[in-house]
Amino acid sequence: MKAELISVGTELLLGNIVNTNAAFLSRELAALGITVQRQSTVGDNTARLAEWVQSAKQRADLLIFTGGLGPTADDLTKETVAACYGDTLHFDAAEWQKIEAYFARTGRIPTENNRKQAMVPTNGRKIENRHGTAPGAWFTDGEKQAILMPGVPQEMQAMWCESIRPALEKSRPETLVSTTLRVVGGESAIETAIAPLLENENPTAAIYCKTGECEIRITARAANEAEGKAMCAAYAEKFRDILGDDVYDVDVPGPAWTLIRILHEKNLTVAAAESCTGGLVAAELTEVPGASDVFGFGYVTYWPQAKAKLLGVAPAVIEQYNVVSGQVAAQMALGAKEASGASLAVGITGLAGPGGGDAERPVGTVYVGVAKGDTVWVKHLRLAPTSRQEIRLRAAHSAIDLLRRAALGLPMPAQSLSAAEARSAAWAEKEE
Image 1 (tube, helix red, strand yellow):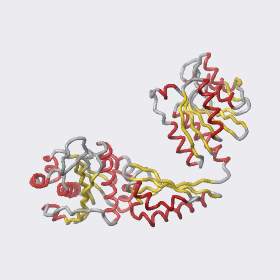
Image 2 (cartoon, one colour):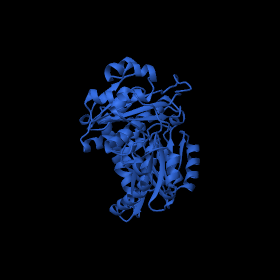
Image 3 (cartoon, helix red, strand yellow):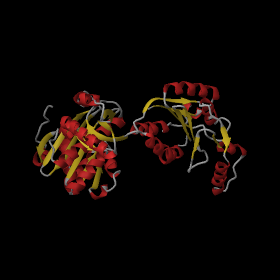
Image 4 (cartoon, one colour):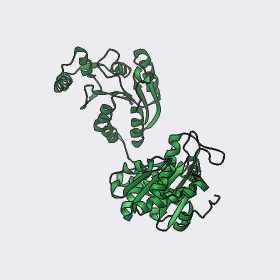
């Protein structure tokens, strides 16, 4: 099935409101195996909306509208779409009673123009709105369908989850099951490695780029959910065979969730000492429920004297090697581990920009140190000078990934030192 999303509202065109509805619906439709071919925004103008609906109706099987169901004169979505689908509207007394009751609960009386919201399809069907005053509508013209929902995100999402998605799922001839692999690395390198697997018809696979990582979404069409899950799991193994340890988890929100789970499973604890990331690692870890069981200490040490006082970084090391150096990152990690008593710790120092870089250490230069037991690993990151926010986020995610690898005992893509070497700084960075 091919679909188009049409958002109605002049306020969207003016940029007064951010359109989050389209992103939500695109994800939901993809999960149902419905292809979204186009997204568009149309202002509150009957002629332009009618013209667009007639055009979109020729291209797609399913049109999904959000917005334009309110009581004001410019809320014309329902009337316009009804005409385009050969339907009419009629007054629904039961719906009007619901609207009156909704207003009464808040001590208000509906005005005459609210009666407009009680107009529902004659041949199609209304969609109950349990969270507002505007019911949705479902129109059908042969094989062509149109679904209308309120523009308020909370109302729209509730209506979708309670009424529309179940109806679309019931109409599917087969079950669709998806799983998402989270993979460390850049999109171009990952896609090159797995290109043949992206051409399969069932299950299908698609790659989506994130900051410092990618998602690989695997979707299987099957007779039932159990069969679909088995197909996805089997196909996921083919990706693991190619990508190895870079696949860090399945169906999780992000790397911090994986690390917290591993720390719980391994009975380990972690501490973080951050400079250029400003506590971003600590923030991401503590977003995860249960983080306080395994994460007890976070240090944000921008000043050299803070690194020395709280983490034991030797001022002579900063003087000799620069505050942005592998030697300092190593001592930050070791100092955080020793001060906190954690099983492992990370130290991060770098240049997030936009200023402060030079020829030797340009913006995007970041060093990450990870300490565990008597070993310290140091990774030199050379991040593209995109933006301060992206550099910080990439550095934080790289640090979390190194902690994951250390916690699991995986090979570390970093220079390995003994704790004694890290303390004395008697080592030189190896060229990668």
